[in-house]
Length: 388
Image (cartoon, rainbow, N blue to C red; front, side, top):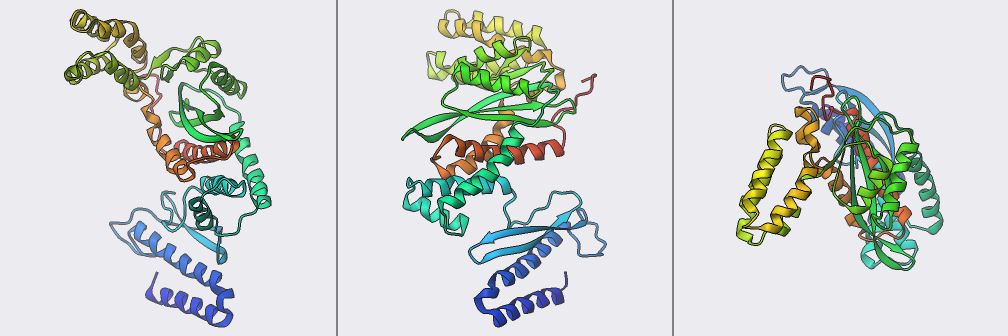
């Protein structure tokens, strides 16, 4: 973009303001913002239009129309695109669905009279408009239908299944409860990750996990040949009832943390932690079992509770040795969901307290839709060749 282009944009914006006053503010801002986004794309590309450069990263790929609501009115924007699909203007929020869901969560708190002055301020800043119960209800209905369709979409072959849960504060029947958000991620036959489903319940009781897993199967999930999760009793019972033939891997990260509760002296922790890592890092199941045997013998007298616990529990963390060597490091824990949980936390901490279960489900679903889309269209998480 040339300096002349920038000058023309600025002149056009000023002319609009001169002719229409504040009535032309939205259109003027849109013009300036469109030009700013073009400049940002040019910087990202590493070259100007029709310019040859060794530093060029990729090429421009047109524009995508986008309407943004603001306190000045609707901004009609043209979002620059690139061929590698990795560029997005910093002035806009990449997570469109999750942004809408977050606004709704806060707005619901506001119209239901449970917000603080802080929440009211955030509502004004985020929504940019006066909020009424009718507006909130209509917006929630539209977005809720879209997200429910995604949650009920058909599934198919899933090679590996990762199960996890987190807790969010929700107002239920007039009191604040810690509600469980149950989540399932699958590794598909092509090696990509996909968020398979999400559900909100009052706890991680077996009945809730069972309903959740049964819903995945009802949507067509099949072929699961490996599951990794923590050792929650409700999840364990549900897994055994719904997917009894799939080998289960207990998350090694959680196992190592659990072991620390059985160490009699805090000074022993670094040594014990390293020895447990040595078991998990063995070259195969046979070597891991031998390492575990030596570990138990070493601590039978020094730390008998630790030895007993290790003998009974650590074998549940060795199922991963059934997988191809190239898959083991990524599939031995639930740590692959770390970014997923960070994205969820980044959103939910703004709301802090959700007005109902539907609100938290809507927001977290929106975050997961965006993350899953990124996973499914990005690089493969695992290479699923038969020789791996």
